[in-house]
Length: 206
Image (cartoon, rainbow, N blue to C red; front, side, top):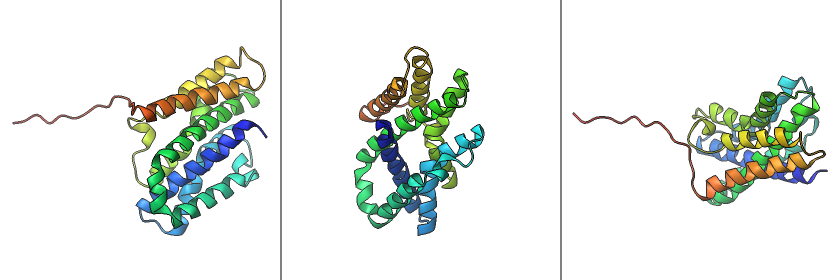
């Protein structure tokens, strides 16, 4: 097992908790909360595998991801008020997951002989943020990655770094470099509350 897989599992749990918390906020029933947690955790990888033609998808062949998601959802249901107070910790684990999923998604493109930079970036980005987009759409929310958060941008930069470093460095090192870059960018954005600019509609006074 690769060291990065531990971060992948931690990120899976964090993604699942974020989905479950949103489900609690939307007052879904227990089944709905668990489903929202699962799609948040595995949605990006599931879509990626469908695009690649990787059947059955990894998340279904390896039930550990769904098991982690279900456990995280149940814990969130039971202790949702307490879990909500650990928002900053969840954000850190979420950043770990984003880094791990971006790196593994980018590497998946190369494993299937898809060497074009846009495909590598797209697979890394889709794996990293796809589940969150599905979560927000299911909950009738504007996806977080389409708002001001430096989230998808961190994934894009990380995947881009992976593409160029794998051409220079052999072995598994590009995977960890991608993970580190994505994680650090997201973590710095969290710590310093960095956001992308947004367009505001100013209402002129009469």
